[in-house]
Length: 441
Image (tube, rainbow, N blue to C red; front, side):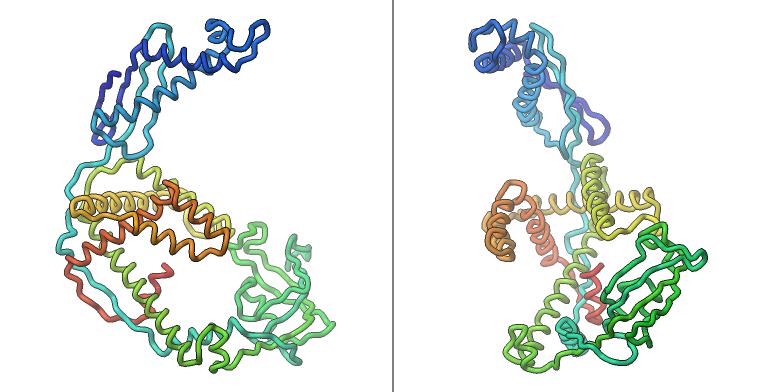
């Protein structure tokens, strides 16, 4: 095997690999022999078909299969011989077969940039700190009570917080034409929930359940997901079948026991503990983000386009799936697709740059992830699933791809921990709500 390497810019490389004719002929004959043992051609007994007949019938298939075999066998050896590691999946241009001739193919790829990581030793960072307040604890208790609320039929006018049961049919307010799809039948609507378009739920306030229908006029938002209704002024004819009043449970010891607590004081303690964990996690996320900002600023070098492309495709695919699930369009985001692509391309570049720098810091400083750490995380993830789902989770995360997914975040956190231990970190006390926004950003 002969290998020739050629530079293509800072990080691009093109490798030309030539396999001797004798080796190619051997691989072709082996493949033809294997096919011949199973092939059925009229006029010939199985296993007795002449090589020239097999080559005439299966030549194109054999060339394709042998090409793939040659690449899979020789390309890793070529990388080892040249002491290079591709940054992403190489692009292979297969060669052409000719009797008695060598087989030559080319591999195009990018190498990882060589650099010395900067800005992480004695980094100056600010860590936000806070503790859960009584207000946050009370709000959490109210949310729990709200999740346990029940509704009972009431007489009188509907008010904010009431549950209504309605039938509604929408019409274009100007033409009077029925609006396609703007029909709901005996649908439960909680006033103030924001589940329906603006103005609709407010139009139910003060109304009573009766056989007499009434109208509500509203305008569909300009960014409404159904474009044929966006911005349309509509009239809805409403039948209010029932009004129900929300009944909240009393927040006491019996209420607390429904959530596995001994009493109300115990429940408050558990809520406080969880809130403080959330605050600590949000504070750490903010600290990591500030570190990544510093790493990105201090380490400027050429990035492999192939790695950025790969990261961008993963980000963009996830974004498209989220938009499809939520029914959101680019128009609703007030950005064009080109603007969104440019924005997420920058995000991909940041992730690749920070990832490369953290990997190099880990290498330089001897940060390692042990198999036991990966196994423990797999156990933790599997424990969140019931029965067979837990076993399926274990099988996936014990695969090479799954273990790599686990390895990455563990490695990142260990490198960050190493940096934080050496960094000059000053604490700044802030409002807990300000920190918790980090979890939702």
